[in-house]
Length: 214
Image (cartoon, rainbow, N blue to C red; front, side, top):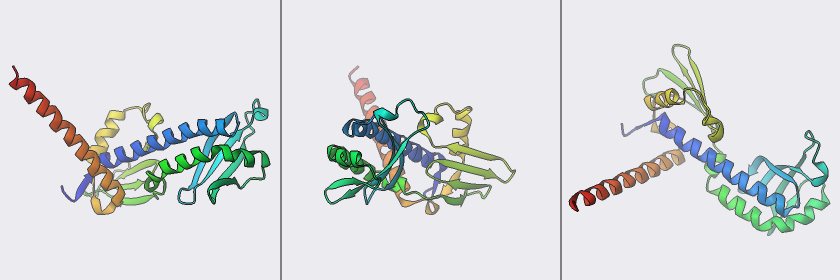
């Protein structure tokens, strides 16, 4: 089993990173809205973490009330600050206020950049009974009998998935070769396993200590 890994372990890494990305975007959307004196800020796309470029949907106070109107703004780092690629002088001036939070945002995104850049890969399980398409937001499984399952990797939506237990059991039963999985995912899996083992050992030691004190 040393050269194999369960699809469930891979899934857990991806879903945790999906949740982390959502949390970061949610936190900094609120901070940027305050900095830029906007009513609403939403993340459309994280274009390039290395270049510190992101595209946002924004609403000013004047835009509130029109549900179908959103301004699209692309922000990118220039020198020690940030500029807007959109022709909006008002926003350009206010970007000075957002510099600290934008720097913090991209520092946090750097930690999950491998996930953000993860491209779709195709692989076959170790028994050659499943064809798998793995991406940052879904796991698609096609079995030889023709069944097709899509497992969305969205933390919030996933809490409402019907038959979640059955799907998790399915993922635990499918193994793939580690050589087919990106190295950064394997490293995160190994780290998670080490943390879990450490917690188990601590509980066992605590239980033994309590037993010896009786």
